[in-house]
Length: 249
Image (cartoon, rainbow, N blue to C red; front, top):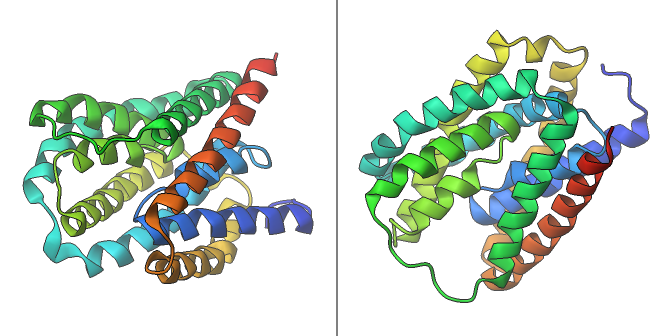
């Protein structure tokens, strides 16, 4: 097991549970909620591959459950650009400085959450040509932080008006990108880090409990209020990471 105080392990478990409560509520968002918080107690190069273990489990469950609603055309349109972006993102994760990684993550989370918090109107439909930038940028952030889901979700939400099709397509993309990341991270030696796999396996019950809680809350809570709470949490998390990254030598 990783050499961490039990209090820190408990905090990590609570963060994982929170991330997967959001996943149960929305069908995505586990990493964009959890990674900014985990980055305060774990190295990013440890936290990102650890979260992937949970993404694989949850993504497979949700993807299998909703596979009949998947829009295969949008999947095939995004995938080539996602794969290119993920290869670049995995390279950056291995070689970039911690200061750069934290600053970029903080900026991304703060900007994304702030825009969603301020947005009032329903997003308009967009052209399929946006698959290229959405896939490439989403792929980079998926490999770097596991947070690329919101990027291609913004694209898919403007392409797929049916919420069941949207949720199923996002879940399937999470499964596909998770397996690609598993290959990239294993080849890059990330899973050879001391204690990573034992800690991830020990915290799987936290991820499951969070997902089940979120799934139960999904039908009981107003979607707009839930979204506002998530965006406020992410604004705070992104701002704290941005400050921490900029203050590093």
